[in-house]
Every structure is written in C-alpha cells, then in structure tokens.
Image 1 (cartoon, rainbow, N blue to C red):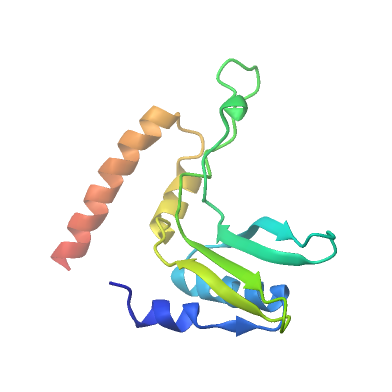
Image 2 (image 1 turned 90 degrees about the horizontal axis):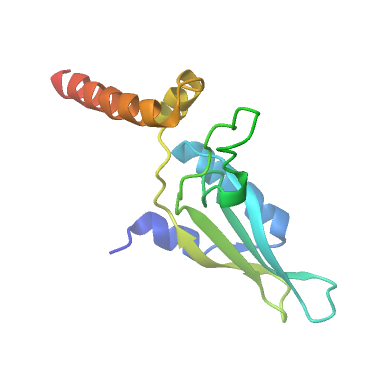
Length: 146
C-alpha cells in the first residue's frame, strides 16, 4: 500500500513542464539519485508537449549493439541497470497545467553503489559483480555491529 509520500507527490500540479522537472530533481537529490528527461508526447499539431517522463539516470538497460564485446576499444562502464523510479506528468488541455499521471518512488540506487561503481571502474564485469556482493556483505555486517 502506498505511503503518505506517494499521495503527496501524485496530487501535485505544476504550471509548466520545467517546474515539474525541478520538483522531481529536488526530490531525487533528497533520495540520493539523479534524474534525466525521457519520453515525451506532442499534441496533434506537434506544437506543444502533452506528456513527459522523468526517470532515474539508471533506468533501462544498455542496448545490445552497444555492448562492444568484440570491439577493439574498452567498453564503457554499465550505468543503466533497470531502476524503476519515475515521474510522469501530463498537460491538461483545458487549464494548461501539468499534473502527475504516474509516480514510482522505489529506486535501486544507493550512494554506496555509486561509490563502488566508480571505485571498481577498471575491474571486469564478472569480477566487479563478485566484489560488489562481497563488499555489500561486509558493509551490512559492519552496519549491524554498530
């Protein structure tokens, strides 16, 4: 069952799309993740936006053609791993105001994940996954003993 936070966000109304982005960006900073603009829809005349998705920077997955396994250059770090956090706002055609249409507040991002990904940037993926699991276990064990 959604909490009070969910109902406070879902009831928000914004004067424009930029105000919605600033609100969600501030919300995300408080939760420890960053936001990017994603999908948008336009009206029939293609004059104004009618829908906009704001998502966590780690939403989605790397495209298969970008995995660069058989390429000469070293592949970039994996930065997208399916974080579900998102805010979808839609414009009311009568009032011109934007209201929240969808909101998912759960995020898979934790600050220690970001720190670990930067720290392990030069380690191969399989090795990094193993080290990530070990590090998390040590982190949780040390947190429980405090």
